[in-house]
Length: 151
Image 1 (cartoon, rainbow, N blue to C red):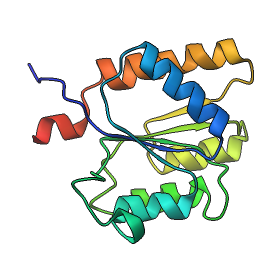
Image 2: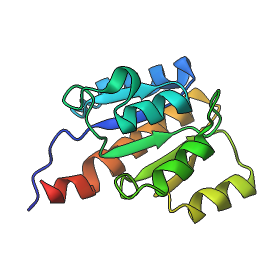
Image 3: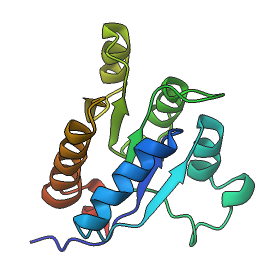
């Protein structure tokens, strides 16, 4: 049996409201995973490559899972996803896309880059909370992440 540890979650999300909803549900569900947030693609890439303000890899560890919004200011989520999945050190990190885009092209491109899941953000707050709870249950409780096996 693999012991569950508090594996870091990187949330790449520009909406304060959506991030706050995520944090509220995580507090209520007593999630122990450390949560790191980047609000745009450039900041996310700095975090992942330990550049800019994120050079301390002890303080800013490599995430075990990434929750990615596609519609970000600057370098958007599609570009971040492409970069992650083309990097041999990052490509095995599960990426769950969490976005308002129901564009079939976005869905197709994301799966072509081997994302782990594509979740549409519900507009209704109750559905949003349910969706976040499902994400937490599945990805942070049930699934064994690659990082857990290598430690």
